[in-house]
Image (cartoon, helix red, strand yellow):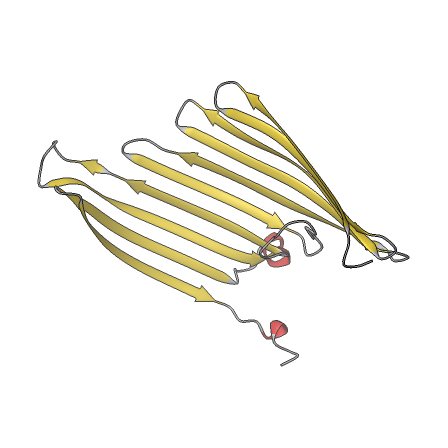
Length: 193
């Protein structure tokens, strides 16, 4: 019965050292007589030197209907973060194939590759000063179709942001941001309209 799928979820996670973890997940959503969706994945969160955090995820999916071929897909994600009182940086990368289907979860977009980077610096004033801290930040974000990314072609979407913030005595903050975004609405996405 399509309204009563059989769902199995398994998640294991283990601490490594004082702040790091490694884990695995398995999901199975089967509708008897109709089809199935299975996802298996592994992930890790590693804290290095107290300032750096590396997160990684790799997953594969198998999705099929009774009597039909099985679609196989993959998802890869990695990020690196650095934080301190003055300098913060992070970068992330995600690559998802068109056939990645998470039947027991939610993946916003498939068939895309995304790369993001952000850095910021904080200058700190004297304790009790009128201007307690201020600093610039830069953020870049690109989204490609997976095929275009691996072929070295341009992105579908870009977002660049330049920011400046300041925090004053009395818990008052001021922010100034400049953002430039672009979107490529390719005709292949709208041929049916």
